[in-house]
Length: 387
Image 1 (tube, rainbow, N blue to C red):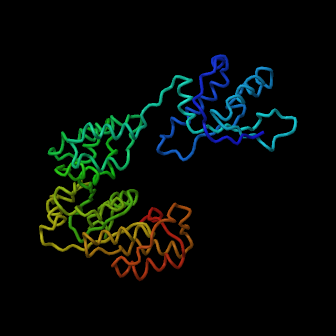
Image 2 (cartoon, rainbow, N blue to C red; image 1 turned 180 degrees about the vertical axis):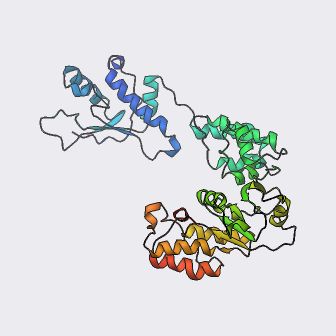
Image 3 (cartoon, one colour; image 1 turned 45 degrees about the horizontal axis):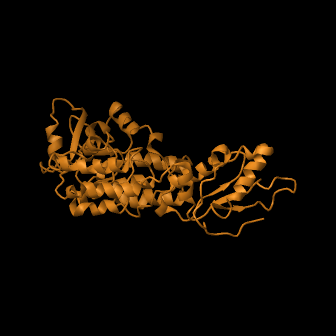
């Protein structure tokens, strides 16, 4: 019959028979394993174990030893755990088939005492203690770190907090975020990605060097304009097979949204790498134009995928190159492919979450390209086209 007890009652003495019952010791160990995986402050209820061939293989041998183990488990009912029988078991099944044991309040301390496994400090407890130890190094005593414990692989909470504290040694070195992360967090250069705001709260004096945006450029002998290309394969196709009128354009690999980076037109914010400089013309003229120092006004175009992300890139590019427009020779070829039914549905290329940018500011894109995509419900990647 099911038990209705819900309290642990008086303290239980360790049974003399426990060491002779590895099956029961194993079950108590399972309780502790589950308790160890979840700190007390994160638990909503005490753990339960369903008896099965996996959790209690000895019971399911259905022999005299199994009957003895079940009787001894029954003797702990109401003191250590509650037993819930499986009401849907077959009439010829043993009573323990499908039964569940639910640890009672206070049962954790009993299991730990009986098995000699004292409770260790939780990760969060250790996290908070470590913050106290390093508090003088953090602004406001590291209050921002107390809100949520942060994990780093198999590192302990103390090791992770110590790594944050180590940042104090580099606040005036002007390292990039990746360099700082690698030096302080076990060589993990990307650990601090997305945590710059947290670092600045901990170390208001921290000086982080911006990572220059890498820009690849093919320069012509005589330049009639600048063409940004979204995808690497299409960029390579254009620079290898350049022909009139493309050979008069400086071709820039935009690498997705890099062309819209806020600092891309500031010295120190961009690193320009050249595929080739046409003739004997030095690259300095291009850099003077790029960084807005020459006063020269070159037309700018963008060619990318005929999809909403490509249009968003164009809109972002116009923040730094306000006259940028969609490159009609490339997009006209993509529109023609779309009209021939060669486009693909967004769900076929993981583009279902691309937001429609609404408007880009480019008349051709807003009046021709975006309406065509909305009307057809299909998209075309620029790699389809070979100009």
